[in-house]
Amino acid sequence: MMTKLQKEFFKRLKIPAKEITFDDLDEILLKMGMILPYENLDIMAGTIKNISKDNLIEKLLIQKRGGLCYELNSLLYYFLIDCGFQVYKVAGTVYDLYDNKWKPDDGHVIIILSHEDKDYVVDAGFASHLPLHPVPFNGEAISSQTGEYRIRKRNTRKGTHILEMRKGANGESTSFLQSEPSNEWKIGYAFTVDPIDEKKVNNIQKVIVEHKESPFNKGAITCKLTTYGHISLTNKNYTETFKGTKNKQPIESKDYARILRDSFGITQEKYVGKTLERG
Image (tube, rainbow, N blue to C red; front, side, top):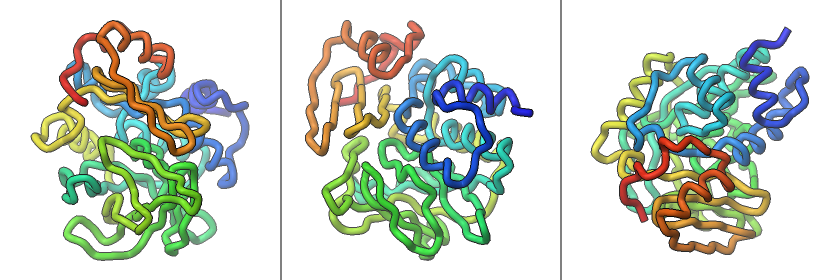
């Protein structure tokens, strides 16, 4: 018998309810990237809530919103648990490719999944940098429409493993807040394999909301994947990347609510007009 979360998850992703296998994860990750926006509107509106299973069901599935890594990956974690997968959450620290520095410690939530004696990173919450497949710990590179990704065991001051990314063989790439892969392997984030609980996830939310170097308390940002690229929205610009070509258009304040509704499916009026500046 399916749980409430499973029923609402299938409905939100427009996937027929069924028993999920490891091979189905590619479809689920792609659907999440294209349907659930990566967005920080609750932070900017001052309406954040504790991260819990019930709150995630209400926000991301019933209200048809999106969220940041600790929401998107926590939702996916609970879904995978309900589907019988062996998973746990860990914390990571993102590396800023644009400024060449580490972002706030433990600011990223990741899922580790074990399947047939192999471990994988499953990440549906790394902004536009989405592998869209489980990434194996054995160093094998996987490719998606956003580029190539691999996991390496490497000790840094931020963890014991790193996720690296680069442009795909045919130039596949994506960008987020000026962070864009190159043709060489670059660190996306470092992480440990120590499990974290819901309390730690809520502490991570607190860091993202309050830290002076957090990029997510400076202005509203909403983005998601599309069939041939990705789209992003701030209160100043609407950017669409189509087959590698980026088109950035300035918008007026009156356009913001319409684009948020039409392109991202977010209709709540409380998120309109409460954005701080971001280019």
